[in-house]
Length: 351
Image 1 (cartoon, rainbow, N blue to C red):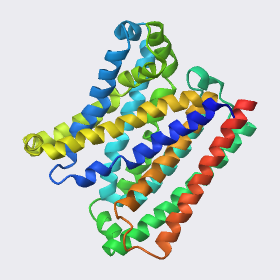
Image 2 (cartoon, rainbow, N blue to C red):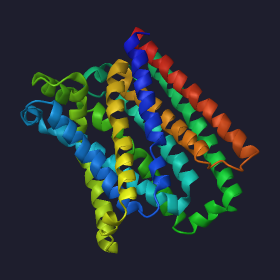
Image 3 (tube, rainbow, N blue to C red):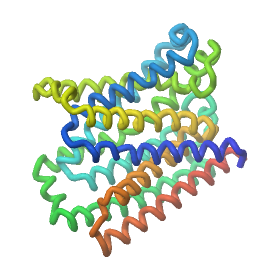
Image 4 (spheres, rainbow, N blue to C red):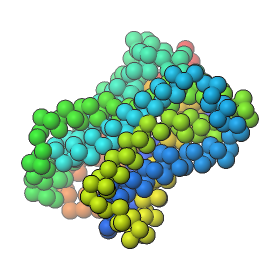
């Protein structure tokens, strides 16, 4: 495998690990609720940071954007809007059907849809040369998806066991907060919509990067310029919804009263943005299969990162027996799935 492919695997893996562990600032907050840290962190992550970097590094960027077909910009924002909606739905599903079930369904569907679609409907640029779904390489990719879903299943079982051990039936208590059937439909929708994060870049990047580089932008920052316009759709949801909640609850004043939590929200926003920058670059380095295999790798490492954070933060303290064995098994299976994705990518390059 060429060095660029290995670098792509490392970059995409780093993206998932940062995203998976990015929630640690939230564990340190004492006063902010969702609407407060959500508003600050998402405004910073999805709008302020990508635009500040793009305006500082990409000459004549607005002229470049004007040369891109408007349908490309709309497509990117529709996908990212879907991703933003998935985040809000996931928050609501945690209350309706519990964290473990939400996590299991969302990650399984997100992995399956996000890996499969770019093999059926080719993305832009180099991704348009991805092998077909029923080619040898495509079938290996689907084996990786199947293995990943098994890993997510065991991680979900472990999550159920942990919550029962720590809360004495916490999952059942959560279910009482909302209708289970409605919550199930919501999490299915969230799982499918969550793929908008990867699709926003994959299906729009080539013409935007080409236009911005023609104006003199360096490669890496040309990739950031894709996120600057693409993440506006996600920002519309993830900034407007917390703003509405603060208006409804008359709690805007909380933002100025707790500078420590405000700083932690900004750190969370930074950690939320870094994975997007790494994901885009890593996908491009992976070549034709970047949109598909890149998504599979990042999904696997997001899950692994979340488990790492759980162990470090003490979520598994005092939990032994079957849940422990299940989470260890899940980790091994997820690593195996990622190895299969890497192998599939090498097959795709050699065909």
